[in-house]
Length: 350
Image (cartoon, rainbow, N blue to C red):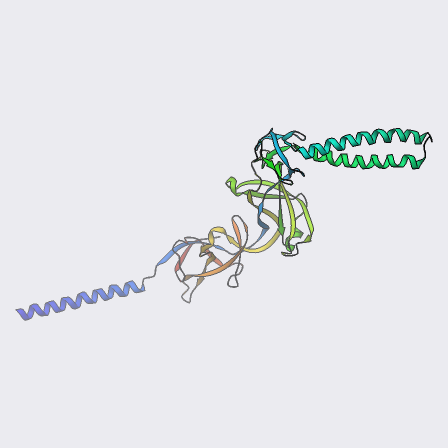
């Protein structure tokens, strides 16, 4: 009986082993086929654009400083306050400047009176030119001296040179100011400007007053529409780029001096090989597409191909690769988890 049981056990093990091997063989030959959507590589006419970073500045920005220096006597405005041209922002006092002005003014008045009298006498031929000439000379010198002294004196009254907003006003009453120090700045930011270097090959595609798109980083990438205001015909000596001035209206004052942004300008159109944006997979900053091809058994297999991306006109992007050509079929849908050599079945083709 024991011998019979042993034989049955051995037979059972052999049978189970055979079943396992058959199951493993079946698993090995079973192919995983993924369902994908596809499209063809197509030649399209896309708009070529140039993108660059930019720092925005107001169209007018003027520093006020005094040549002689002095002590702050009064401050009438504050940072961010709007002023009209000629309004007094700050008053200074400086004994030397004031004394020079008063002295020059007095000397000018005397010289002017003498000049006027002798001018009349000379015109009536009551004095010779040799007698008249010194008074004319003194008058001209006194006038020049007075105008220079008055200019310095007037700068003790810090007036706004243009309509705009006060900025860079940080000193206090009683502070002594050194000569040539900036006391405050007046800026007109109703229009903002920036200069962007354009490569030579883009110049043929731009023109004066052409509209451009401008995104401001600090304003959550809010978009503004600007225009090309100037195109410098002389290239920069170091970069060989051509500086283009771009202006953008800023009626609400949202864009502030020094804000950072990006400009995008259309510079023409090109016929390029392209695919839908969603057909491009980005891995480690490189772009790839999955090309669908048939093997010897007429089964559909994908090959991963690296592509260089070019122009983007949503929803299409230019691609370049020596392994692709117009009409090739690539995967557009079902890209998640797709790898080189996977078997696929197309459920659509565009």
